[in-house]
Image (tube, rainbow over all chains, first blue to last red; front, side):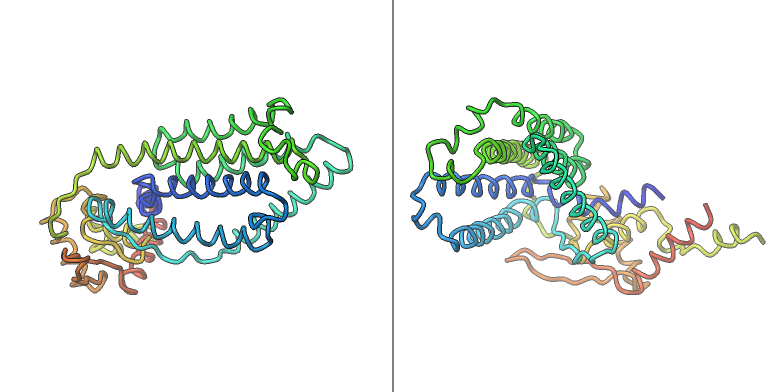
Length: 224
Length: 98
């Protein structure tokens, strides 16, 4: 029965066989962090800081990445190891309950942090690190054994970023208009971790793509 | 006869064959997949895979659609409603009998 269950999960894990999921997410995060950096360093009244700039940027980036990934799949993956179209996921009750539970837990943690004046940066970074590691491990790492190293690296990265000295974490935004508005350490940590996460995803996805192209070949023949 | 033994006797023999079980389980998790994907995942040769698919198609479990991806012919496969129901029944029966 476990073998059958394993077979049922294989198509889901096939989605990242060429590293395209990681490359897409990595590019998305690079784009997002770049936007944050540019908007912090631009003048406060510049176009980068208008209320509509981020949604337009995200929509454009997402469109480019979705079609880019489709093109990549058509060029390499479908020709080498086959085409799969997925069933639309059903909204399950357990997912809904987990989402509500996570939101309540986050809210309670936030209130506790405020009431007891705890250093929230460390807590948030560990939370973000755990969340990204868990989602990466579930979605990607369980298909390929060496990617567990990447999952561990993500968690270690979150802790290391949280332990960095203030002058280093606030460096990306110091001297900008955002220094007067935001907690520089907090946003600096998040920025550095997202950049680190993006870099790790791009590296891991790039290695997967290289290995995939090396290990598979394009027959160019009919599929049957 | 014990219910457990009865359950074994009632197992769907079309799906129970290992090669066909692999095909049905893989197709159950997707909307459609092509022949190349099944060949890659099951590591079966073209002839064996074709004969299993033919049997499943004859039983009404699998829908086969011949199409083109650009200029390259493509064989798209999906489970029919009967195929889905039969696979769900097969899993239940297998759980009951083990």
